[in-house]
Image 1 (cartoon, rainbow, N blue to C red):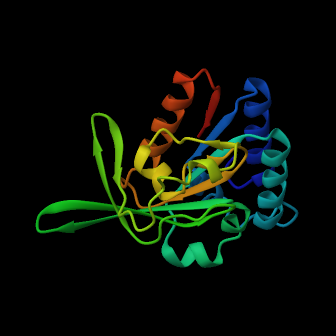
Image 2: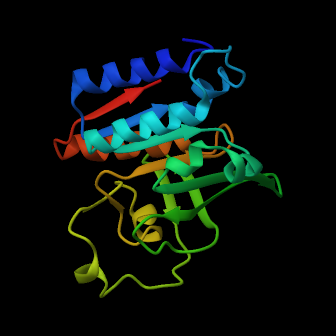
Length: 202
């Protein structure tokens, strides 16, 4: 598939249509696209790939997680970010000999996320998020859309105003080891525990 976005798209479509899942995870989406940064003449270009993938995701009505190691500048310039209904950014830094992980949600369509950076820990239970509660969500439950689904990560749901809408595409970005795949695995496990099917591509 290397260097050919048409084959990448065909592979994703084939995988999803065989399994007919409610949740789709593509990990690592960035690696798939990076291999095609300079496609040969006549090959599918990134904007067309993004548009066609977005159309498929919308027609399937799946909730999807596109996981990749994107830099801050790419988030402003890369066409991939235009198709996402939500963007979740993880980061990590060493502070006083300790690894400090943070998460933020700069965009979630149709909802009002908690702004700023929030603390993340990875332990034997998976990804644990401790949001700084600027806006309390108590009393807001009756205002939440009925199509809202939980990610299975309490703190992330709180940050996003209660979860994510069914059918949304979330792009999860951050460096290696920051918890991107762990987040998707936790969401997948939460879905399976509720008999919701999921498909992992990557």
